[in-house]
Length: 169
Image 1 (cartoon, rainbow, N blue to C red):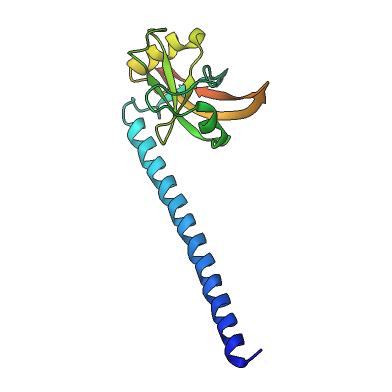
Image 2 (image 1 turned 135 degrees about the vertical axis):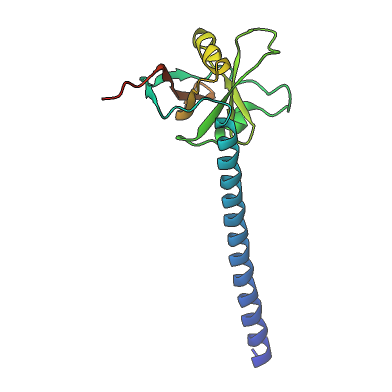
């Protein structure tokens, strides 16, 4: 091969390497931007609630998210697809679903990017809805994602706070 051919091959290789690095940096920047937006959204979500700094944390309540195998009516997106992209430890928002025709106390379990993964179980939604309505924060995060039969299921931890103020020592 001639010197010119080798020079062209080397130039193409160098350009390809730069392209791959640029692409990787672009993905990293996009991920950082998504994380920053999610953090900002969660801070905005927290502003709805009373300050918890002077309240005692209660024992976390572990529960399974209901309705994970269905499609979201508002977007048409399958919740299973959303759950596949979710991570353990991810923070969630709890949003009362006032228009739910099946359960007047329904609470949506929603990721910080506004994608719904399901609902709180009916057995605990009445208490949680009461807390949310009184601006009492209930934090939620994904504890475990696992496969049961053919569906992904999600177990979450709900962190509630006592409604009583901490007593000074």
